[in-house]
Amino acid sequence: MSASYGAGGSQIGPAVAKRLGVEFLDRAIPTRVADRLQVPLDEALAHDESLGDAIGRLVSTFALLPELAGAMVQAGYVAGEDYRRETERLIREHTEGGAVILGRAGAVILRDHPDALHVRLDGPPERREANAMRLEALGAEDATRLRKSGDRAREAYVRHFYGCDSRDPALYHLVIDSTALSNETVVDIIAAAAR
Image (cartoon, rainbow, N blue to C red; front, side):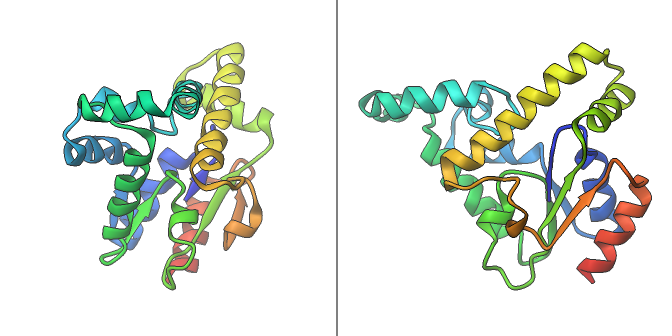
């Protein structure tokens, strides 16, 4: 499941997982990747898609200075490619028992998996901002800023590691304007498609 900022992925994803009786993976992914790579969580989080412009700064640093990236890995820091590889491994491991995976380029990583259902949650920017204001008790300026930086970060993550646009509808079986429907209706649609 891919979700633009304010599209309700953090509410809809767990609800779909509960309905289907499978695990939900989102915030746990960076923690598990850090454990596997034996690096501090903040190092793994520096590569996570949800951290706004931080990934862009790190990615461009690594791209410009590959020898620095190698030295950082040897010193115990995680490089972007290591994070990507371990994230992919973790996501693939969870396909056997079924899981709802929010973000982390799951639709790209599992594009050839015959049982995967790829879903994109989106909606007009102003309605996504209104959702964020309601759910996160934000003011209008903060919601706009977070939507822009969150969308940019998610797009940069997929573009950098996989060379494609996370908004491309061809990546998904379902693209839903989750701002136009209730969360319960969106969960019903996704659960019905998954069965």
